[in-house]
Amino acid sequence: MIPTITKNYQNVVISTGNIINNELGRKSNEELYDGLKITLHSDPNAERVVVDIDELHGRVQRATQELNSKLTENGRNEISIGAKIFLNKNSCDCVREAVDTLLNILNVTHVDNVVLAYHPNVTGTAGAAKSVASATSAATTATTETTKTPCSDDDVGGSSSSGSVNSWSARNGAEGLAELKDLYKCLELYAQQKKITQLGLADLDVEALRELHKTAKVAPTIAQVNLATCCVVPVDLQDFCTANDIQLNTHGDPELLLREEQFQGLAPGYIIDWSLRYQVHVRCRGVLTAKGYIVGASKPRAK
Image (cartoon, rainbow, N blue to C red; front, side, top):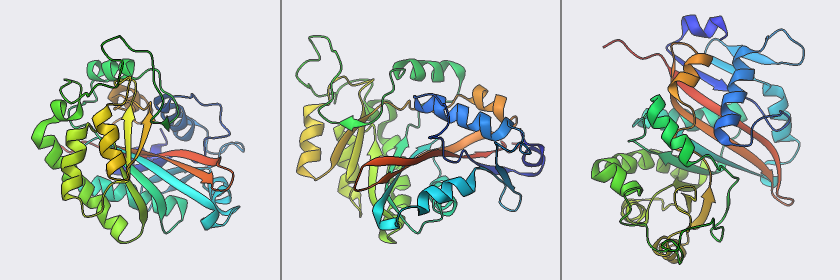
């Protein structure tokens, strides 16, 4: 890892820059790992690698100028910027840091949508992460709710997953839902300030989504479901989203983007607090013009 960051900072931010032109893995966890590896372990003096160290803010940023050029080659009203935040711990400070960093690095006043993924009972240990990674190994790009994967006869017909032990509510309980509501309130402030146009949530079953929707001041308009763990989108979830004007998408992201030991190999002494993926599309053509990851990490404080 770049020595300046390792020695001097309690908290660091790492930006991969635009990864579209890199030969990176197609799965999000592979893209993130490879993007961080290129950013942190390439020779910053090499001509083909442009890595900036922002010592004031504790940031390592790759190819910032190239990213900015992609964002400005079309007018702001001609592009759509979406992001997904993967939160590793219950912290509104992390939510704020993720959004503020996104706006700052992309140099924009607002983004079009942000989806929050929060799984409090998924840990970064090797065993837990391995089970999550294997359950979501068939990662794909987001598709519409009509996408289906092969299922057993018991699964055919879009039966409700409400009682499933794998549902978000069953795994995280009332405490997890209360935490999610507080985290969502942090995002709502950005929507109220018009810094985020649409808010979304990932992987909730219909019970959790319904309960959060009841208390939300800014109702979520995007819901993501992972078809790696739910081969047919439950009918009750489809009905709730339809009734409440919520766009229902599927995705293939693992709940844990990067295992602790993987990140330790890249940035010794640090753990990931949050990570996000952003994508920039040209509206009229639907062309993906920029894509990258940003990670917020910190050194564990001595107890």
